Image 1 (cartoon, each protein chain N blue to C red):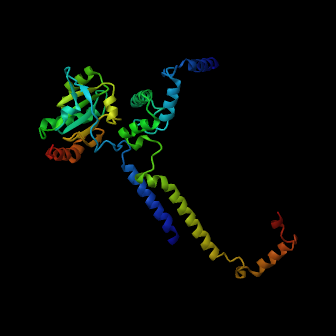
Image 2: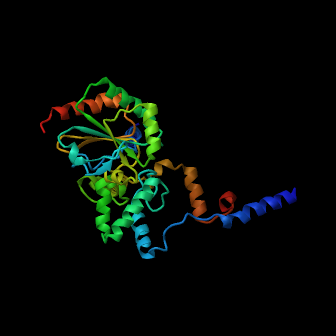
Image 3: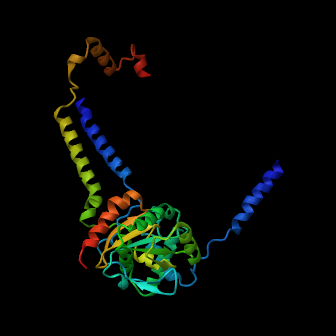
Length: 179
Length: 165
């Protein structure tokens, strides 16, 4: 019996590693941008001829939500965002939509159909700003503090659960921070 | 039946040369394109994670190749371009991760396993040398066995036909 002890231990350790490996989401790549200043941009708005730059957002806590009308999982995420904004729980937070590699007509139709949770919507038609932010799969969400530093990146659709457990507590903490 | 097969065969073989490949702006600057392929072979496409950036058809990969092409035209070195990628997507984009504290186990792991295996082998061999299998243990041989052995050793084929076979 004793001679099986070592192979058995090794086997259990291996199973442990595999179990941990299975729990992890390979799509969730940690972003090197967390803790770094948000890359600067100046982008046109989805509606009208104005443009907005990162400078204009200084002193505010903002959430950059990257989405597109062609993105399927954005449809899962969208109602969560709409509900959050409608609830008026954090009126100080700017929800900035980044319409990524999309057609303006499609984007506006999409917002008209599913509701518009965004304080303002920006257009990244050629995906350059997306590359600067390390976007590789829409939807992605970045949370930027008052000093313009990225504090969190959420890859994939925001769910009720991730909103309640991860995003809202962070937003509340950042909102309480001094400028 | 044969006619149908022939037509099928012709239909399958004759169309292959007609499939045109996607137009790549190779002619523009073949040296730069070759450099791009060489560099992006070592980069991971983040959309289809087990594909390299040079081989991927994902939209993002095309955009990133365009971006890298732009950087190359702007005279950036390979190291600067890799920095550009790592700053945005992290070490995950590199198929060859850098050696640093968080990757020491990754790089050193195989050697640790090797050292462990050699150590285990040494212990095993030592233990076996200390307690050899007792080949001279005569107690396990019966008299009959002994007689049979000596017959074989003295080459007496008479009674041991099966052994000689």
